[in-house]
Amino acid sequence: MDYEFTPPVGKISEITGKCISLIGNDIDTDRIIPARFLKCVNFDSLGKSVFADDRKTLRGVHPFDLKENQDSSILIVNSNFGCGSSREHAPQALIRWGIRAIIGESFAEIFYSNCIAIGIPCFTLPKKSIQNIQKYNHNKSLFLEIDLKNSSAKSKDLNFNLEIKESTKKMFLSGEWDATATLLENSSLVDRKLKELPYIKF
Image (cartoon, rainbow, N blue to C red):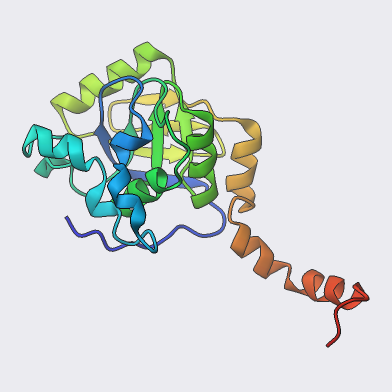
């Protein structure tokens, strides 16, 4: 798979893409990106190493290695996904592989926050709904259209409501999740504040 990365920026209201299912509870950040890969100077190379140990163990049949799952961008997971250490490298590895949204039963809190910070919305659904989606996705390719404004997702055969924190939804719809873009948009306010500070001389 080509791991060329284009980061999301600004407002995010829709996400469309093919789904990839990863079955299992309590999949922690050490499994998402093993500790030996944290020595990198930047995150650029992490995409190819996502789930490195699990993929090595499964010898080509891990979901992230299957040919039919390449170019997937919506990850379907079970409960407590992203638990363990707080390493920000985990969502960075996922987004560089190509993941743009995650739908699961539940997420570890810090992992959830780290995803928001780089533009990956995380949605929740009841256990039975997730299992039904994973079963469907196992039998045939699932392409979803996610509408953040209405917290919904649909495909050719499926149509369901997603759960997402209202504050998180507002951040994506307004673009406030993107701290750099927000700062640049308000550069005039930054300049004005700098001029007001008595200890900064121009």
